[in-house]
Image (cartoon, rainbow, N blue to C red):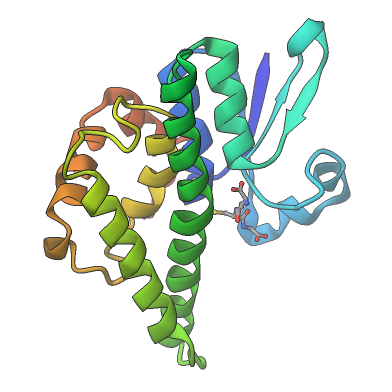
Length: 211
Ligand SMILES: N[C@@H](CCC(=O)N[C@@H](CS)C(=O)NCC(=O)O)C(=O)O
């Protein structure tokens, strides 16, 4: 059985959406980030990075127990285990890897950077580099928009690349993005947001503050 250690944040949602998409059985251990549960020794023993998400699969390859603690690694592992959302064709697979790493890197990093600096600014703290981060985030949205002008999903077919990017782009308002500038990203968001597994995964573990 797979255990998911998570909270319904943008990175946590990548794992919960993927688990819902695959239909693999799993249990959820909700993590109280506000109480710093992710920094406790028992959790650092499975995830040295002290962040969520993390999965432990008791029945991994060759029946061995495995732990995955980076969201991109979790997506790839679950795709291979389930045979879903990553193509077998080696050429199509390359394109999924391109966009998976773009989403795990640029989309996640700039989205998170802007998100936290906006919060700091709203709390009256210093935010000297927010403008630079917002410019970079808009550059990333521009690349996504251009790519999505010729295809419905980042790598062509719906894949783990979309699941990696979606939970960050879903929070475009918190990043103060003018979505009107990115019409293809807007329709992509709607297309993915219509998927029942995505709707379920966004609220695993349940979150009651609407964020
Ligand atoms: N590179 C990691 C980033 C994970 C991450 O930053 N998770 C955040 C929640 S979205 C977290 O656990 N924050 C709590 C903390 O920093 O202590 C991944 O992709 O899984």
